[in-house]
Length: 196
Ligand SMILES: [Zn+2]
Image (cartoon, rainbow, N blue to C red):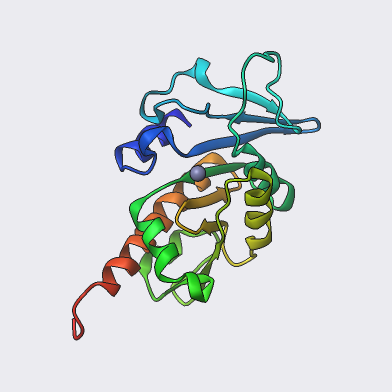
């Protein structure tokens, strides 16, 4: 997670201490390892990470608080086979959410990088769901949960960012990289002059 957060930060996807990453360590009882709130994600140390239970409480240290957005991660873990959930804010995921909001999804087709999404081939058409943002974390968690689709391991939040997950941390990181590539591609393609 330290390496992934550092890489995402270098790409400008975790600016201003935003974004959060978590991995599931255990199911019974639920134990998540999460990045902290308000820290520069490019320079995380092992001791910065929080061990969190199924209710969002930090295990063994009541003085520390988990990220408010961790409730969104918990909703994803509860509804999928995710072993890691990574959430990033980027210019291109925000632009794509704006451009295709009225359709409720972003469509990817015929792009080689689609093959980087679990189980997909070049022939697959992938629709990334777009859901509304909210300042209320319970509402945001409900919006993201409602957007979860069997088609892709990710949900895009309008003018906020993407939540992406995988069965393990490597897959979650790969999905973030692939989706950021695809989102940048479709946004840039839209801006090309007609005829290109
Ligand atoms: Zn966020």
